[in-house]
Image 1 (cartoon, helix red, strand yellow):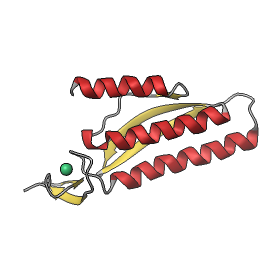
Image 2 (cartoon, rainbow, N blue to C red):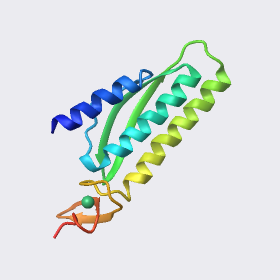
Image 3 (cartoon, protein in one colour):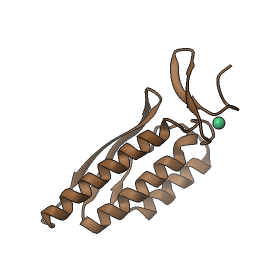
Amino acid sequence: MGTDVLDRFEQLEQLCPHVHLPFPETPEGWWPIVEAMVRGIEVVAAQAGIQVYVLQIKEKYGTLRTHHATEYGDGDERLIKEALSVIQHLVDLAEKRSEITCIRCGAPGEMLNDGGWISPYCAEHKPR
Ligand SMILES: [Zn+2]
């Protein structure tokens, strides 16, 4: 893990005070997806006045999986309900995007089998 990834993580944490993050256990090619998802969640959480606790961000069966919990006080119930729905959509969107994104470089990719492990790869990084 390079310092680049650590820097990106710290930057993301600073940009997103409503989202509490573990260090993502994801391949480097998916970092842009993780960043876009977390920044999206931040916007929604800030609007609804809620805190989102991301418990885990990892790769499973070749896709990006995010587990999260939320904490909210006495905010507007309808607003919170809508926010939770949007956050779930952002998580689902990131998972869908990961299915077609090379885990090595982030270029468009497709699911390929690498000795029993299935992951998306671009033409350049596909297993040989
Ligand atoms: Zn690639």
